[in-house]
Length: 384
Ligand code: SF4
Image (tube, rainbow, N blue to C red):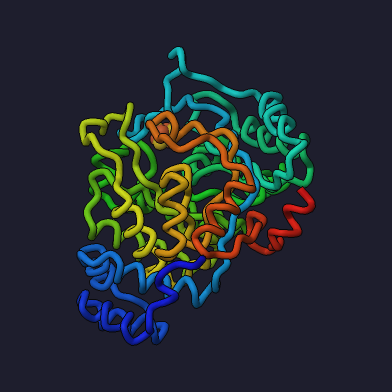
């Protein structure tokens, strides 16, 4: 089984792309030239999504062939208590609320220990910005995960959390990153960017760090030798031009620092948020377009990830043919998107991820967090 694009005669494919008005963009893509802001806008506004997907698939195939990556990971959201009140967030709670919780480092350690019988090699930890926990707590949370499983890769802390630590630590930037490295931090996830424009920042997350501060913090992270991911939360009030602006800002920072591993467009789930009156979740159409445009604009990002928790497994599977080359991991226990109403499951097994990838005509490859270790799936299954 393989995706239908592969059976298209290349000349016919080019004609379909030209008919969609994307011939000039196709010429740039085929020549490996960088796309301009206006190209990004045209890709967002082109009614022919299949043509946009065809172009993105071309780039994805050039970089990764038929490989589609996944990993075996677990999520730990160590607190939902947060000083901020972002309008798109259903996860955060205030201290004293019934649903508020805070994990001690011991609980984090137990959460990681619960999965010692599984071949988990990454723990992904992000959380709210707690009003009173001291700097040492964040280091202890990382140490706790490493104590439970010394060989686990700790991918933790959004730029919002890193910015908060830098502020409360009373230490220099160099000291904070040295402390995090010594505690066992391996890399950072890409959350907290939302949409990197001043209008969206003011309208829906004005209390927390804005576009420039997110980029500045990401620059600090990468200059201190940590790799990280980058996200965009789409499907609320943002406009097409703002999505393109976000992508161009990420691309510029990648040119400068080179530390981004993956771009991960995140579909907004409105339930239980202050934007619930928008009343709809993103459609597959919007999800696939954001994957495809990200792949085409971010020519210096190695990976575009279809995060199945937010896209749902079915859409993430199809996204592999619209530019994505990664479907994320097993996850195990996820709170942030589930509080906002996703109907995706909390976990997928390795076998389920492999099945999704194979059914779409791609070759499943298990990777580590930083993509420098790949395992052929059949032998991985034999070892699991
Ligand atoms: S998105 Fe993050 S920073 Fe904003 S309210 Fe939710 S947990 Fe807090």
